[in-house]
Image (cartoon, rainbow, N blue to C red; front, side, top):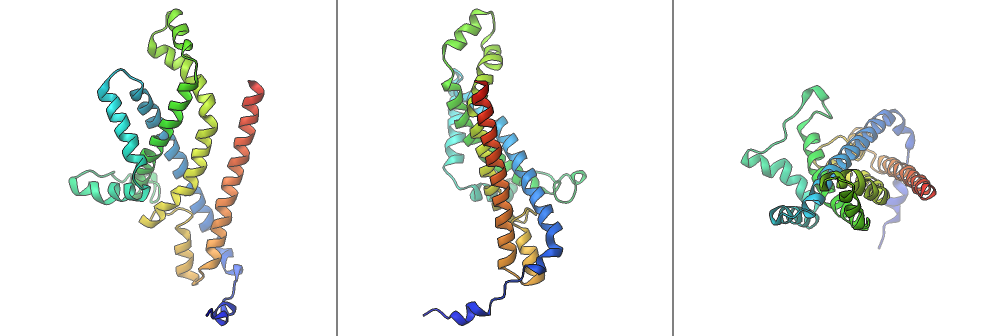
Length: 239
């Protein structure tokens, strides 16, 4: 039987959260920076992996396929743990960069960026592959007939058309990473999710900081979703 007396004893007091607003803002900025860096790295790795999959080299095809299969087939938290604690045992570690500051230059933050970026790259690879496949194959022949090499045709004709197709998907990947990046809080990265631990330890309030963090995530994703809608309408208009 539920003991409703315990429920009634809980007092919700958001007034205690006022002085912690700067902390929530700082954590939110870290989350945005982390997600943005992750998607940028993911785009670069995803493009490289996509081009490797489309190359004539069986070795490159195998490496790209193995990369996407392994990353997409294992939990992101496991990958983060391997980068932080597993690879250090064999001498592989992302060094700290103190000149970037105590948060952005810490080894944990930089390792999280690398781990999440590699994870994002595997998913972006599939987005880009679908975008490239959507471009008519005659475009390559047209570029070659104009005297362009395969690389030049891919760079100046194929990829720009594919980017237009996959741009909404890339924006959605950024939104997903905003939410998924909360996993870095378990390894001590000072993102918006980690602020709940700081506030809870100082105020002994559990419910209030979680509600505030939920609102922050909701606002971030809602704003980005609205921005994607504007971009899609603009692209449809231009088309």
